[in-house]
Amino acid sequence: MSFIRDDDTGLVLIKPDWPDCPANVRAYSSTRIGGVSVAPYGDVDGDNGLNLANHVGDDVNAVRMNRDCISDFFPKDVTFLSQIHGILAVDAANIQDGQIVEADACYTKLSKVPCAILTADCLPILLASTDGRCVAAVHAGWRGLAAGVVEAAVLQMRKNSGHEITAWLGPAIGASAFEVGADVVNAFTQKMPQQKVHFKPLDRDAKFLADMYGLARTILQGVGINSISGGEHCTFTEDALFYSYRRDGVTGRMASWIWFE
Image: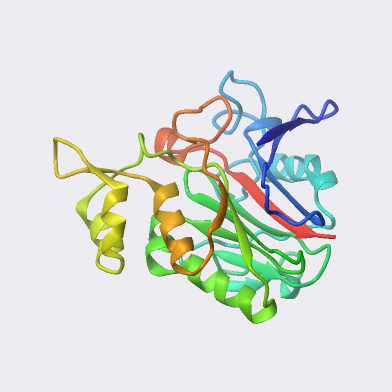
């Protein structure tokens, strides 16, 4: 994984190191660095930040300016999904400008159509067919992961491409910070008992530490995807780089997006 700094705006983006990603596919993930949002949507030093979400209480003009800051890294304007921790995957090519679409994944088989999602602890998953002709972006919180949002996105991709799929896991809360209850453990293990290995019991209050990256890898492998990259960050502990809802409560959101030329 490499970082890109834009000298004009000061923003810092992540460019995935994704060995099996086709050469015509473009993908990025934002950080909290850059932009014009002020506290509590700024950066860790109290300077302006790159919040990209309209639904968290930030000034709408600041969000618009932040989105303008990253526009050079999109092939065209993007309308972000209204994410509800569900499993619906929609065709990004059918989303009209400004349209409110409640879904947690989007895909496309059309070139220069970006698929994008917002996160601040939940796991962003980017998917690409190995022929470079179908891509998807998935917002995977624990509820969506357990309910089947990954499987729903993969199903739509396979309807549009007969090729293998490769995955990249973007910045999410790490295994040392994501504390959950037994209800979360049960949500995964009742469907996939092998997921138990991704929960570490704590010595108090029947709590566990959950490995979101491990859970996602097991689900991806379960649908036949073995080319999986990323999963290297923790949004909760790396406060200089990332917003974290669990850490801060009122905070901004990062974006992860993908398209093909």
